[in-house]
Length: 258
Image 1 (spheres, one colour):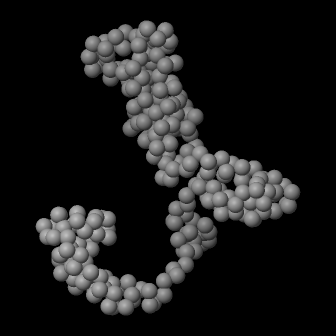
Image 2 (cartoon, helix red, strand yellow):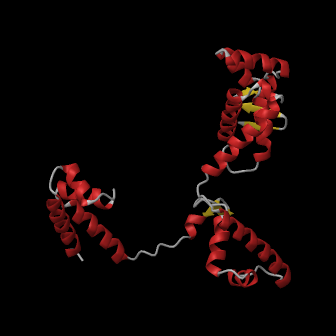
């Protein structure tokens, strides 16, 4: 979805060209929808797309994809069409507006990359207020320890709360650019692995590669799939005692490399 001034395009269609339905037309179409008229349903959806867009205005400025939010809003519109009853004695748009907004809110709540608890959000808000107060008082940005002392909370809890509400940064976010040479966040990360660690990992991979196919399958099911020895035995068709013996032998050979 592309927005430019008062022009809105959805999949290349300018919504300024979409029909605007009167309340009488909406009620007439809703009646036909109740009788199973699919064309009336499609016309009713298209005739209310501007309503979806008006609801989405309150969610602008977020990082979510605008097209995704629009599709979620249309789902809310369809739910409103399916559940609206003329006996409600309310305009369809008045009924559909909170349905659309609610659907978008649920999407934003349920599909966040990281779910943050209410208590953690409250602590983050409290910490930010304390941070602002201390910044004005100290004429500098306060440390996490100073914020903890101001709020009476544990320092680790303060750090966790404030990090939980901060926007994630891409590893390829540019932090400096000069003469076409851009420095990214990933360029500032240090690899703490030394040569010995790298060689140890390589040795483990080589040892695993030398195991028998059945031994590899047992280790995969046990340590990557989290299955019990009984479940593994049932899946590959041997006894639990055999699984235990093969697993122990494979692990012993891996340990012997170190």
